[in-house]
Amino acid sequence: MPTFICNAVAGRLTPVQKTEIARSITNIYHEEFGSPRYFVEVIFHDVAPGNYYLVARPAPADKISITGEIRSGRTDEQRSRMVQRIMQDVAMASGAAEDMVWVHLLESPFADVLEYGRVLVPVGEENAWFSSLPETLQERLKPLA
Image 1 (cartoon, one colour):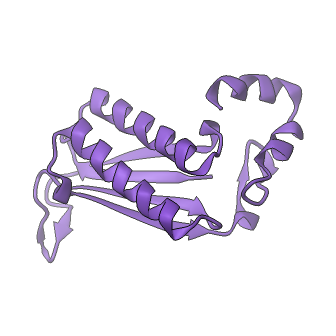
Image 2 (cartoon, rainbow, N blue to C red):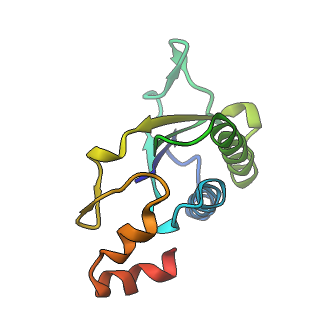
Image 3 (cartoon, one colour):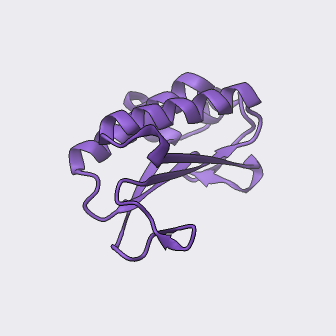
């Protein structure tokens, strides 16, 4: 369910940096919340120059903005720790200054989410949900957990 959208000016992030950022966000989400990695989706939007603004002016070329939509039910401490870790890892992977990496988390109720052909369950019930999946899908997802 967690979907992270990473916006940066086109050409700002290399394929290697994008892979590192996606891996980092996936691992941080798993470590902070205990959810399986196979739920984490990271999407990169390469924004054309002149299409990214901050305070009504073109954004600095180094600016990276990440918006993550996660299920509700996480503590303030977990969310705070997560955004801090994402900011630090993205800055390190991209070479950007930490103040140029912005991270926003949005919470969404689980009831409106369907993944892998099944409606998601409340936080903490992922193992039962996984067990309800067809065996072939379970085998495909196990290495991603």
